[in-house]
Structure formats: structure tokens, C-alpha cells
Length: 262
Image (cartoon, rainbow, N blue to C red; front, top):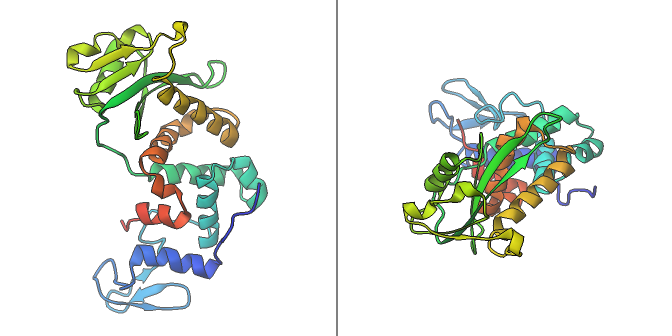
């Protein structure tokens, strides 16, 4: 694993994150009075409250230094495995895995329905002999790459139809494989083409099937196997990487997008 370029010092990292959370006006989140600075924190002379970037955001109760936090975000954005980061940083495996899941949990959700030409497919994550199997259904816009994913209990007709109706506008054109549960989608107003894989037809459904192959490679690289406890947040990450790519350009871009005072 290579080193992370341009890693700021602890003081610079603290200043960058504080600027995002408190803003340059440095107002008390409780009474809006101007804050005064001490060597390690800000404080309000009106309500006497001590304020740090961590205390007024979801970073509260964190023992990580600001530089460590910045480094972990950079490693997560680069898809470095938990084991590699453990060897690189000296942090414990549970700490890194827990923070990776926390970063994913605070990603924004895209609620805008997909439209146009949309490929739909489902995939199974996990192995029956370990912690069971979980079905994930997904849809992606052909062209833009926007996607929506969801964990489902099964892949019967009612479940898959409900997912499509919730995530894709009814004036869209769908491409699916030959799984029978995708039948009758035309009844809702969708255009629908079935790609017959047995006849070598993969062109349109490859847009969503490539999502599964990339996702499973990432899971193996980061955790060596599918960790069911993290699958909900992993799905949110796979969505966000396509729908909000700016959040993954730098640690500061991620923090600017998600680090909102509580």
C-alpha cells in the first residue's frame, strides 16, 4: 500500500475540519454568540460552552486525532482493504472497519427516480455455508451511470416489481435478463426488452451486471469475504460512488458534503 499524498499535519487537519463545521464566523451553536479560542478548543463567553468540531457533529465521542480521521477517509475513498490500512496505520481492525461503516452510513441518499433506458438485475451476496445469502436488486441508467440498489428478502415478482416502480419512472425503457419475475412489467407502462443470455445477449444488462462484479471485488479486497453486517452501508456506498462522485475526490470534499452540525 502506497502512502497517502498531501496528508496534512494534525494542526492543519483540525483547522480544515473546524472551518467546515463551525464556519469562519465561529458562532456558538447554542446561543449564536461569537466564540473565543483557547489552545485546544473554542468556547462561548455567554453560555460558557466548550466547542470543538467533534462535539457538534457526528464525530462526537471519537478518540481519533484529526489527522487520523483525514487519513482513514482517504484510505476508504481509495478502497484500501481494512487489513492493509491496519498494517499501514497501526489502528485496530475493528476500529477501521467501524469507521469505514460510519463513513458509508453518512453518505446522502439519491431519491430522484431513474429514467430513460434502465438496466435492472439482481445478485446474491454471501455464502450459505458462512453467514447466509442476501439478495440485492439494482437498476442503473444507461448513459449517466446513476444507480439505485436495495436489499430484498427474495426475488419474486411482487418484490422486483415494487423495486422497479419505486425507483424507475414508468415512461422508461427497461432491460432485464430472462428471470421470470420481471414478466408483466409492460403492464405498468414500461418498455421492456429481455436479454437472452443463453443466446449471447449481454450488451444492455452488462451495465448493471458490471456493478455486481465490481462490488464483489471490492468486498473481497476490503474484507476478504462478504460481511453481512456491513452490507446495508456498502450498498449505500456503491450507490453514492456513482450518484455523488464528487464526495470521493478528496477527504475534504467528503467532509464538506456530509459533516453537518447536529
